[in-house]
Length: 338
Image (cartoon, rainbow, N blue to C red; front, side, top):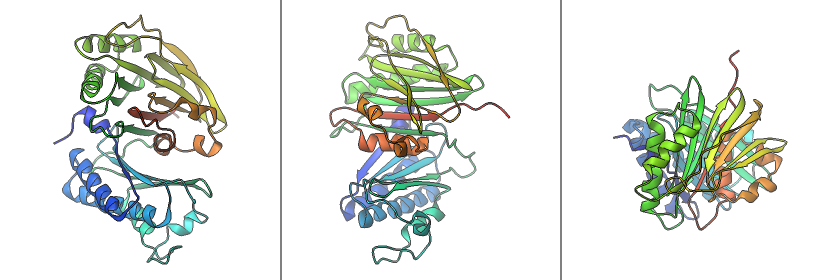
């Protein structure tokens, strides 16, 4: 059974600080794969893959965690391992079976590479390592590589008041981040209602999407909402509340945008869209206030150069507020047809 959009958007996080956490991460990966419509064999593969990545964190890293996320567009699964050091001096050698710096058999990274349909690794000595292992559903089209999502509930809550959605259509990619007021079950219900209104007709003009979400949320808790539409060379943004947008390249943060004051579902003003230039080498980061906005003031070239699937996890791992739900959705720029 496929999960509803709200559940599929939520990321499972496991801090890898003891051996039982490795088994817990593997179990969550198996459950996420099955809930995302993947076969039992694919779910087992996800569990083994996650166990290899988590075990590697336990043996070699500090400040490590595993994030398990259904892909926001397709029936695939991302397993991302992030740590805060020491980084890999020889990442290419680490991918070879038998290579080890800890006296072990050296099978972890080589096994992860074989099990994953796609594996992306970035490392910087003294800073840390990020690895995204992506699995495709058997027979499904590979999901886009230029998209990453992390959506975490506040610590201590099972329900997440944030949610996100992405739709690719001929008119461009449209992406949404919703932050239900507060956190917990009622906030999760508000964000789920906003996502449902968005998915009913995601190709509509952005102000009309916000108006539809405003109507859907009037009987319950309100929300902050940010929505973007990416076309070749541009990104259109429209938002209400404190969901932020940053356009980044490896050279720095090029543009920032914040939603208009107000609450979707309560006192929403007339939505005013804004179009920004977005070159092909840039990425759009749409994030809730559970990701501290200060990350953009001190972003390093290493952080800004991460591909979307790793950048989203890096923001959640290193720039997350402990007091709120946190979401980061990262998309590459729309490309012109060749």
